[in-house]
Length: 424
Image (cartoon, rainbow, N blue to C red; front, side, top):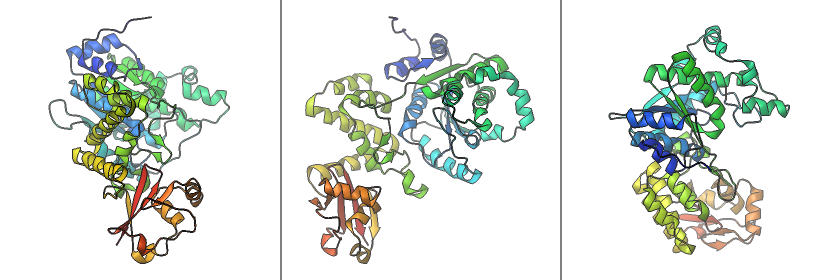
């Protein structure tokens, strides 16, 4: 068994001790570069939705640590590559988005990054869009410049193409071009900003290695690739996926409620972390020192809930600010420990007239506590659905003015899902 290398750079020390390292093209050389110079590194984010979700947070936190250890982070928006669609880890083609949809999505996801990296100062982060160069390149020019650097022999051995071919699943020629485009991004960023590091998830390893190789050959520069492990929960679930869907990072309702999580919902997601994941998530998703995390990891039994609250507060503070985190904790305390109703809960407005005509099934779906009437019925059958903390016994229950308490009606599913109907 090989021993863990002793790193000289703060970057490699930080990334490894906090659990980010899965693969690296050359750990020793990257460590030396980071110890003796300002390393510029990037991560690409395609604009497939108007918000990023928690699945992207590992990558965003890596950019944060890169900057905090003296490096310069580049946030690369995939305004160009989104038009193709990354086939990595997908068994079918991604939907083709219009230019208008991509621009809307781009606007939504831009809002997140300023919470995690600083765009001012000596090693200020850079925000750039690969449409700046990909949209301007003619197809023939691109083939002559980049296509000659790739062989079909190698491309069909890349994991995505290989899996599609072995499973006799279609892969369009459009998707087949994606690795060329992503690899060329590294070339352009190296020329424009001296970028020498591409970071990403383990599903991007093939594309990253190809980009490293292309940049070395075309520019003659020493560059590196670094990937994180696939983050799963202790029970084997995918990080950031819940029964309610993805845990989005954007809290702005203007981008569309289906791609938003309120600060309270975000806080609650972290508070619900499984016991076995608390230490790992504190290392990956907060700035807490390793020594403090070790003390929290040592808590046992009911005491582990204190560590979960710290995790929820720290993670929510990074994204939404300290006040939002404190308000979320206060809301949770009022709702769960005191059985009350708190203003921080997710809510929808209704008139009193509309309320008096609203059945409990429709109200539950309207508030997003169930995806359908059928799901709401199942909650009632299981004894999990409540109005103002009182169990609902019948799916025919209709709300009325008598249910209004302090101007709201609280609907709950189980002990942890609550929302308000605000009567206006």
